[in-house]
Length: 405
Image (cartoon, rainbow, N blue to C red; front, top):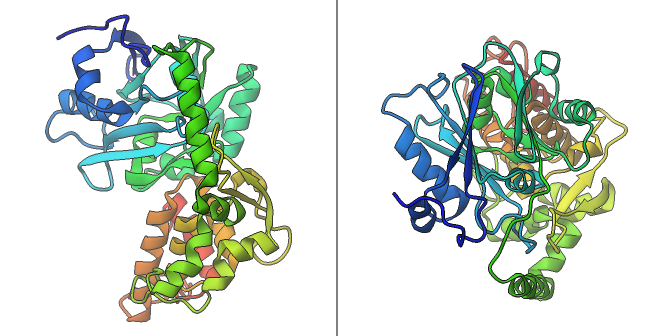
């Protein structure tokens, strides 16, 4: 295999491998052939796991591996270059599992000197990783076990006492091995799909904290700057950008409703009578406190909401706000038109570390079973799990995270 060459711009050229069973860390050079044949962080993760995972590996066993990876466009200063990939064997499906997330984590990992982090083995007690400009520590996280994601991130940042730290953490759902547990970054960005938060939990890995200041070299910095300006200019003139900036992805709810494709009551309908109430347009008029953007993104489609009063308070702005997938899976799919309730469930999913989509779909299925008498109040421990019952849905989110009932 060809090994690393200095002219492979856009990469740092290194893999950091951490074995939580024996506490050993090592650094390996990336293979140039792999970088050329397998596209970006996603392709690299596929290649590495295909090579290293054997048949029959238990997704929640110590032999499963968790890969955090970035690609050549990460951390070079162009819009859209902030997503990182997490991959492993999924406890939800038993096959390939992958999720991706935006934020500052990709910059931190890459500028610390690594394109890939491979976590293998399992710790006997809770730990977190602290990766600072190439230096690696496995730190005790027993005091963090059981805490919500935002609190975990805040405590770690206070402990390491460094500026520009990015944290990816699990909450109680990952600790309790919920099969669609998420990995959460900045408390409101999530690598949500395929249950990789449960893989972290099985390894007793509470969080990964990264910080880096190393330069990412490119062949022609001036052309990269020109490319970034071009992408930003074309994005800002796109008519969809204004809708996303004003109303977020939930601004598409009225269009989906008019087309009859808004997922409703466990997908039995595409039209929801409460669609306007859970739309981004209504959010902007009621509980939106500010807009947010992923790093270097000119769109600013993220929502930040706050609910101070009422039966579904509090909803804290630290946990962001819902986008289309969230208002659909936790709103129309459940027959719930109370936007505050949707935002409360969205916040709890971020806090507990749950995939909002799988959570909503699971509750919707349970609601249809309840409606058809397959589940009763004996099964639900007294909850009237009917479509539209927001209080019951909020309680089920908690039960899922703590595996109660």
